[in-house]
Structures are given as C-alpha cells and as structure tokens.
Image (cartoon, rainbow, N blue to C red; front, side, top):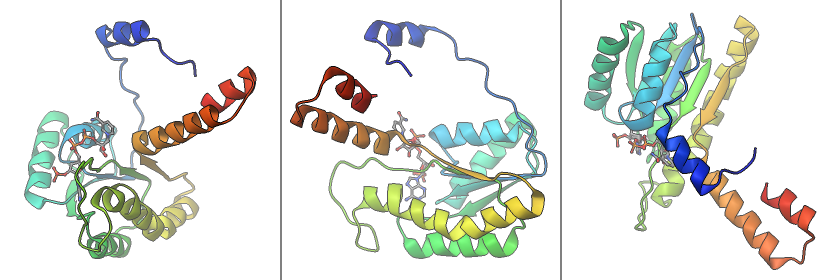
Length: 198
Ligand SMILES: NC(=O)c1ccc[n+]([C@@H]2O[C@H](COP(=O)([O-])OP(=O)(O)OC[C@H]3O[C@@H](n4cnc5c(N)ncnc54)[C@H](OP(=O)(O)O)[C@@H]3O)[C@@H](O)[C@H]2O)c1
C-alpha cells in the first residue's frame, strides 16, 4: 500500500468515515477483550449489530463491563451479550478466564484482543514482567494458546473459519523502526531500500 503524504493524511481527516462493513455473524461467538471503553467498546457495538450468537465483553472490571453491556444493548438492541472478567496483568486470571470459557462455551469464532496499555514509566505486573510487555504481548499469547483448541474445535465442528484479531500498531511500529535501522546501517541500492521499507 502506498504511503500517505502529510497533505493526503490531513485531507483524509476531513472526509467522513466509510460505512462500516456489515456481516452476518448469526450463531457465532465473538469475544472482545477490553470491551468497556475506547476502540474495544466501539468494536463490540459493531459486532452487536451483526446479529451474533453470543457477544462476550471481556473486561477487567465487571461493573464497567456491565455498564458497557447496558449501553450497547440500548444502542443496538442486541440481547445475546454477557460480561466475563479477565485481568491481563495477571497470568492466573488469564488462565482462569480461558479455562472457564472452554468449559462453558461450545464455540469461539472471533477473538478480538484489543485491550492494551501504553505505560511510559517502568513497573512490573504481578508475575514480575514489565507491565506493557505483560498485558500487550505475553497475556495475549497465553490467551491465544489456551483458546487455540476451542478455536480449532469450532472450525471442525461448525465448518467455519475462526479467527483472532489483535491491534497491531505497536509491534508493527517496532518492526518498522527495526527495518529503518537496518536500512540506515547497510549500504543498500534504492530498490532494496524501498523493498525493506515497504
Ligand atoms: N487510540 C489510539 O490512538 C491507539 C493507538 C495505538 C494503539 N492503540 C491500542 O489499541 C487498543 C485500544 O485503544 P484505546 O484507545 O481504545 O484504549 P483505551 O480506551 O485505554 O481502552 C483500553 C481497554 O483495555 C482495557 N485494559 C487495559 N489494561 C487491562 C488489563 N490489565 N486487563 C484487562 N483489560 C485491560 C481497558 O480496561 P479499563 O477501562 O478497565 O482500563 C479498556 O477496556 C489498545 O491496546 C491501545 O494500546 C490505540
């Protein structure tokens, strides 16, 4: 994809958003992690309009999750929602969430890992890992691994293609920075330079 110039970017900000994609997810189970605010809340609302079999709002604070549920229900009329709690800064909580989910749910079609933090001051989470690393990457990997068999079972039982979605800005950005460093440190021709930066 071509890169936007500053002018193109600014022009784009003045345009209205394209209409959101509409899909029918009848019968499917969708989990949005970090659904009580920001992008996760909007994503959950969007799924709520797609007629999901079940929409799970996975939040660390049950009360915040419940108010999100009420707000989404009011806005979309979706009835098939529930709140589950998970604290991503704690591996035990992630494991408990995944184990219970697997025991209690027959299927998992879409897992949206949206929750994340961007803490600038160093601090360790409960298990000793730096908090950004713990919440944004380690817990995500753990949750994904623990739910993999249910995703796979869903695929074979219901002949569908389950998927997980993760907001990728930070890893993508880190990858791009690393590529830029490589480009700077090597004496590359223009075409090699462009293909690395793409
Ligand atoms: N907005 C942007 O411009 C932008 C840019 C780059 C990347 N992102 C990434 O996109 C995602 C959503 O962004 P946003 O702006 O919507 O963020 P946000 O408004 O801060 O919402 C983050 C969500 O993650 C939850 N969360 C945070 N820490 C958690 C934990 N330890 N355990 C469980 N849930 C936790 C929050 O719950 P609480 O309400 O309980 O805190 C909230 O529901 C984030 O991962 C963010 O890093 C956003």
